[in-house]
Image (cartoon, protein in one colour):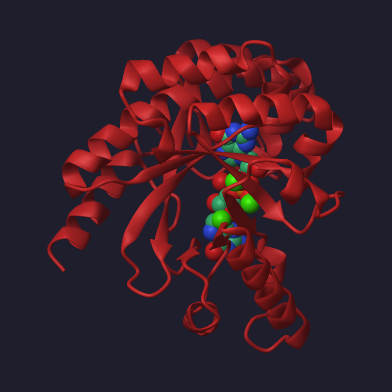
Length: 279
Ligand code: C2E
Ligand code: CA
Ligand code: CA
Ligand code: CA
């Protein structure tokens, strides 16, 4: 069955009868989806590990297809990355996220930050800095409240280019987060070379906490390293109270995960901020 209207998007499953057999049809659908405004942004709270107060949000893209339902980013981002549509989508997401954080700040009556995923191709694009400047100027968001999430892979494709670009971003005081930290092909040398502010510890190191001694050791080591290098750490994919307790105890400042808030539409995020206000 097909349902229309905001917030009434069914969950897409690869086994759905209406699902395309090949990504080629998905790809074709993406171009009309841009025109039809089927892409939207969800916001997942990033909270203080101790107080659980919302400190910011990560922007996560959603594609609400009229018949397929919610197409997960794992399906459409790689296609957009290969055909270049990611530049258009990414530019839109960056601008929309910056506009949105102003509204969040008004509701919360305090400063919040917004974290936006930047794909490798977007990062390499000649237009990227212009898009960044436009997002900042049109929204009026101070650059230090914008965090750009990139992966280790993105840095390593062309380290010299990355270094130049990161310096230009740092000049604007936008902050850089390493997404999925610890899972990419890279050396720790880049922490020395590049102006990085945030490490997002991948869920693979969080999910077996607190029982796994190896994961506990890795998390402690990352937290230690971050403390000495003056970096913030966000633990990703926190799903249980036991994980949160362990992370808070180890001195992790920020967590993100289903336990403290799923990715949600902007109006739900606004309501969550209001709850924070009256606690
Ligand atoms: P990511 O940047 O690592 O985002 C975190 C993913 O983990 C999100 O999946 C989020 O919904 C999910 N997640 C959050 N908390 C939990 C948890 O407690 N447990 C579990 N199991 N998962 C959790 P999502 O939204 O499906 O996005 C998948 C990936 O797609 C993202 O991974 C990111 O690489 C990419 N992506 C999403 N939005 C964008 C975007 O706007 N631009 C770009 N370039 N990539 C995006
Ligand atoms: Ca991310
Ligand atoms: Ca991640
Ligand atoms: Ca996450």
